[in-house]
Amino acid sequence: MMDRATIESFRAYCVAGTPTKISQLARLTPTEQALYDYLVTNNLRLEQEHIAQAYVRVALCAALSLL
Figure (spheres, rainbow, N blue to C red):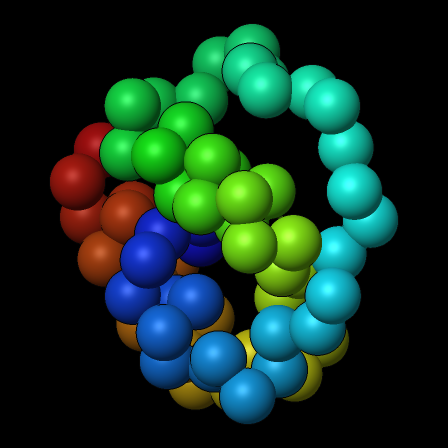
């Protein structure tokens, strides 16, 4: 669930990240890479344990229906 909607929905759970010099990650989609760039530039990390289970369930069901 590396997407901008998730970050924005749970922005209250974003904290300072660990600075990194890694600019490209293997196997990310262009959309995921853009979000990674945003997170690195703004030094943000989402504490994923705070994402509501109902949100995760909906996202997983939506992703699986695309397969």
